[in-house]
Amino acid sequence: MTSIAIQIAHQSSLDIAGVTLLADLSGALFWEEQRLLVVSDLHLEKGSSFAARGVLLPPYDTVATLSRLAGVIARHDPGMVIALGDSFHDRDAHQRLSRTDRDALTALQARRDWIWISGNHDPVLPSDLGGVVASEVAIGPIAFRHEPTGASGEIAGHLHPKARVPTRGRTMERRCFACDGERAVMPAFGAYTGGLSIRDAAFAKIFASLGFTAHVLGDNRVHTITASRCY
Image (cartoon, rainbow, N blue to C red; front, side, top):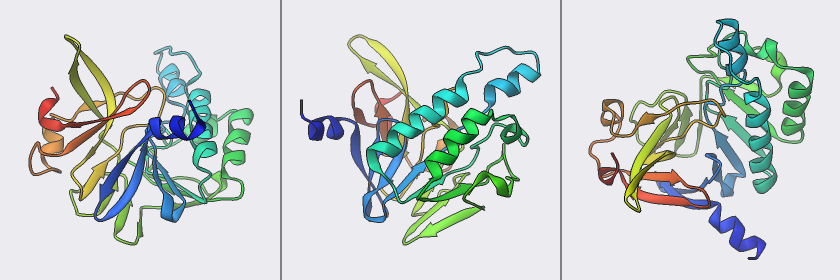
């Protein structure tokens, strides 16, 4: 298989308010015209946050998340990255980053613009993380924010959409993009993040009907399925 074929298998087109973006198999969005990569809900240092409360998880979530982020950045070589909030699992998570992980993050930010959108888990982000911090950003007809409002032209995160779909006599539950052509909710990118079913009432407040589409992240490709076919 050629490198071009492999790249196509890793992504699917997604239209929002007249703008075409690529839904990457990693859970990122790429706006080719703007050379803009968007990720949401990294939840870095979730493992250490749980450990502090006595819930022991393997402390590798930050390494895994940054490694996957490095892969998608290498694939698209964006000039700008927007992280759509909840990049850190709690207000102090950035202080728990190891030197190795902080250096890895700095390397990813080199030679490109980087915007941290504040989220409900990380409402106050420090200035020494690199890049700039904003509550939301508008580029052309698209508004980038953490919590979805249902507005036209919006790309948001926060809800961690997932879809349960029938396949070969069983069901498969995977992260997904939720989109109706006017707005989109992105899947969580973090290694330890859970998900909320797109059939949950929270999505009914954003999309007028179940006519919206789930762009489901499969093993080797992004599957496009109408939300009404999901459980």
